[in-house]
Amino acid sequence: MRTLCSSTLIGEFFVIGFAGLVAMKDPDLSMTTVWTVSGIAMFLCLVLCGLVTRPGGVVLGWALQIALIASGFVVPSMFFLGAVFAALWWASVHYGRKVDEAKARFAAQAGSSTADAA
Image 1 (tube, helix red, strand yellow):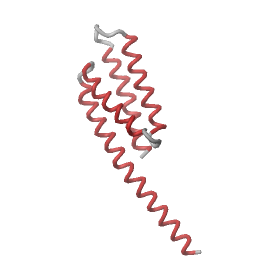
Image 2 (tube, one colour):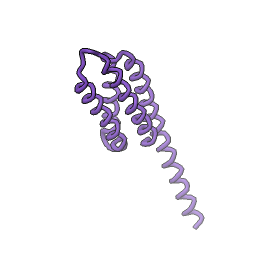
Image 3 (cartoon, rainbow, N blue to C red):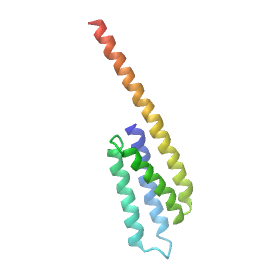
Image 4 (spheres, rainbow, N blue to C red):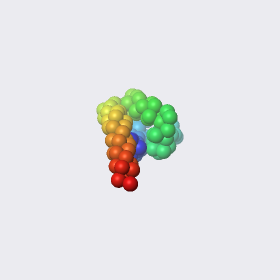
């Protein structure tokens, strides 16, 4: 699960950075505000890469997905991109857990067949 979720978060890192560049063109927003919010979100993406497998990591990832969708109020294309990344996040969590379960099952089978052979 960690690999799939981290890949999604790294993709989001770049999308948030590019959204920050687009948001800079809004005359109502100061550059400081745009890069403070974008920087915090980008940093959170990187931190979540390490926290995904810990308790609450997936929930924090969902919070980031909601924030990414909500950023569409500032950069309208983020409604679509946020929804795409939310779907990718769901797939990463869902299929990542299935892969982890399959790995554990195969490791258990390999361990029992090694014990049987001895």
